[in-house]
Length: 572
Image (cartoon, rainbow, N blue to C red; front, side):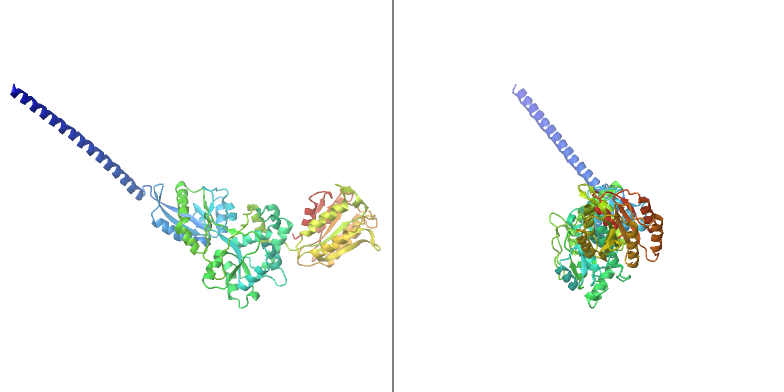
């Protein structure tokens, strides 16, 4: 019995031992499985990482096109970024930066078919000089909202003494045409480029709306056309061999007497000036008053690029805007935007003041219109205004007499005339000056002075009797031919509510006498503003037509009359 119990206990002990062993084995197997799973997972991750490093989709090139002023820094940053082995969408990325002037790249990108011979390989990332030029890629679209990579204000580069003199005078951007065409001219060079384009836009801007983008209506207004034309015509006195910014700055630096140099100033970016001043060149920045144009260098990821290139461009822009990029651009004299704009350290001759306000970006059409005017500037007009003051001008039109309406419109129109044009003011009816039906209120002379004299005299005029249109037109036209000037277009502007009631001159003899008075070597056009559809309007159309002039039929109460008179008395 005792032996039996001992045998049973032994069997139980052996069973428990086998169970423990089995449990331990299971646990060991489970642990091995877990360890194996982690090993497989880590190996898979490592293999994935190795596959990424191995560029399973191959290599790809990020093509970048940049304006020359930022291209060198971007090229250096591109090499640094590429050296870090960037992988985008399983492609190893190499960065290639091509320097191309903004205007050249814009034209290539705007073309229906991109031509790589013009501006290098078709880019996925374009960094032009300024947002205004970026309108060229509107049809292509951008993948992300463009933001400035770096900025640099547009200034006038000049010798320190010249810059100090301009600053002391408190000159504005809109003062440049007057400074350029004065007796002691500024001699401002206007080489083709973004800084010159920005300067011309600033000159064309109305000071009353300078915080709003320049529109095409303002850019094509007589006042803007006159201002841009005066500046462009004055720049033609700059020697032809001074064709770019570098040549202009070299001329300023080398001149023994900066005030006597063939160039006194040139539009540049602050960054361009900073690099030269750091080299020890005697230059300074003049910052005209008013909103400051800015070379804002937007980073444009073009939507026409393939997905890998677009993704690579976005990552490269992130790198450019990181600490290495900011340091590189600051060292090159740029301002770097961010939560607060970083500026380079001041140097002798150039500080980096806060810019406020920044000039708004003009519309694409407005910018194109301004550049078109600069390329083919209008010369200052010389206009003799011949105003009908016959009895019919006392007729009420819109609450005032026709004569009062015209007086007000002339005041507005002549207030916008440029100082280098000429104006004469005549009135006519019958017997206003002895036997003559006309009277000269202000002889042909400087626009502003003649306008004041003529309008002052006109304020005391009351409507008279008859309408001797033909005799008065012939007298004014002959006077304009005699006083002809080669400086710009010459015209006689007739403002009448007609018809001619002086029977001493027939319509046919009037037209023949006008043709006889004309001189092909001294062209004068006859423009007509008819305030009524008079019975002799066809004769007036023929007279205007044979001199190359216009006929406009309108009411004296028309709000657009002042604009019409301004256009017909302005440079064109």
